[in-house]
Length: 83
Image 1: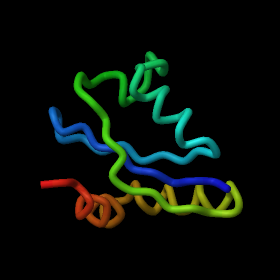
Image 2: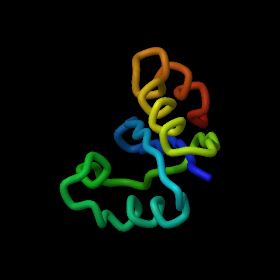
Image 3: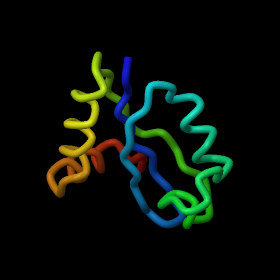
C-alpha cells in the first residue's frame, strides 16, 4: 500500500506533500531532518501530519501526489490545517 501524505509546519505555515510505502519511517526522517538538502529540513519547527490517502500502486500515488502539489490540490489540503 502506498500513501500520499501532507505535512504542515505551523511556525512557517508551509505544507509538504509526498508519497511513501512506509509513512511512519518517512515521518521520522522528516522530523529528525535526515534529508539534509530537502525542503522540510530548511524550516525549523515541527512538521505535523494533516492528510493521507492510500493507493495500491506507486503509479497511482505519484499521479495523486502531483495533483495535490498543484494550486487546486494545495487549496484542497489547506482545508485540513488545524485552526
